[in-house]
Amino acid sequence: MKILVIGGGGREHALVWRLKQSPLVEKIWCAPGNGGIAAEAECVAIDAGDVAAAVALAEKIQPDLTVVGPELPLVNGLTDAFRKRNWAIVGPSKKAAQLEGSKIFSKEFLTRHKIPTAKMYGTYKSARAANAALSKVDWPVVIKADGLCAGKGVFLAPDAEAAKDFIARVMEKKELGSGGNRILLEETLEGDELSFIILTDGKSYAPLVPTRDHKRVSDGNAGPNTGGMGAYSTDDLLPEELRKIVIANIVEPTLRGLAADGIPYQGFLYIGLMLTKSGPQVLEFNCRLGDPETQAIVARMNFDLAEVLKDVADGKLDAAKLRWKAGASVCVVLASGGYPGKFESEKRIEGLTALAQNSSVKILHAGTKREGEVVVTNGGRVLGVTASGSSLNATVSTAYKAITKIRFEGMHYRKDIGAHGTRLQAAGD
Image (cartoon, rainbow, N blue to C red; front, top):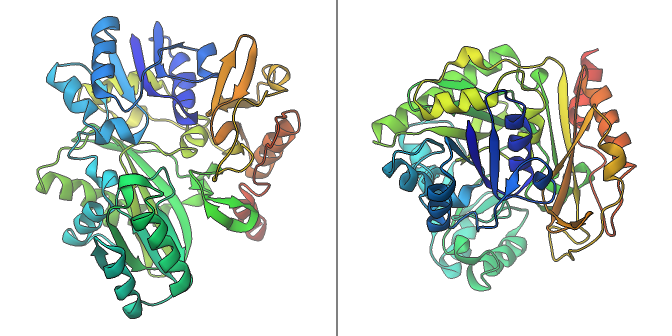
């Protein structure tokens, strides 16, 4: 098989790394790729969100399968363009991708199909209307920008002053671009967050191992939201009884609801959950794999990803093929100085060569590029230090030990990825 992967972040490097291990795979292209992916696949410089450019590339190279990583090409209708030409591709249609492309569409879908989620106060097209509604909410309140905002469109406002500031930045100053043209207000849910991702061919589905993301930039879940500063996976995250509830109350009603609305769904469906005292509730949908959850997930895969994804594209998913390593995995993101605000690029990264020999750790690149033999920073989230092992404690230790070997100017990272899980395990012991 010859495979084209669309995207250029840590998620796509994780996919390329796992796909390359398949004996079925002869060649991998990645568009646009990054400095780490370039060592494992042929990178092609196109804009991942440019549907016409992706179609032109596929016409030229003729892949047997295309796998779409990020949300923008999906929301822009890439899979529709490929399927119209009878090309095998993994990813939902433009219509189905509205589950991520519009928070309001997603909320109305959840409400219509009676899927557990936070109460919505309302949706607003102007800052004035949104500010007026603040007098009727309970605090803290969740404010969500409707469109795609690279993980930065959700804000937990503790009071009216903070809420009005965020509304002004999003709706008037347009800090999040067109993604902030509309906003919604909803009640705050309390509990532990969980990323539950499934793979579906439109008829059958298979859950992936559960993961927990760390969105805030600083230890102890402090500071602004980011695209994700790290993730970990253990089976303990989702005990069997709770897993059954998630499947029965959320996963299957979601798939039935999509079918009832005439929206066939094929590809990865990310369900962001809050595990509240009254049961799991949906925080958000993403129409693709999470990042950095993917890095933690692929580290536990014990199956041929290329074979399974080709089955999905062909409408022949067999859930029994998805087998997983026991134990745990963790991904710690190393970010540029200033991220998630303004940051500088072109910082030389030291220490990658020494870690290349370490079989217990995989360095997955996100915001990097190659300049000759040198790898430099080229984004906010730069690297994902990814490890797997028999226990969460040991795995976290392995990842953080590897980080001590890496250096670049301004590098920062959270020191507590997986700490919540290790505390719970210790309490259980």
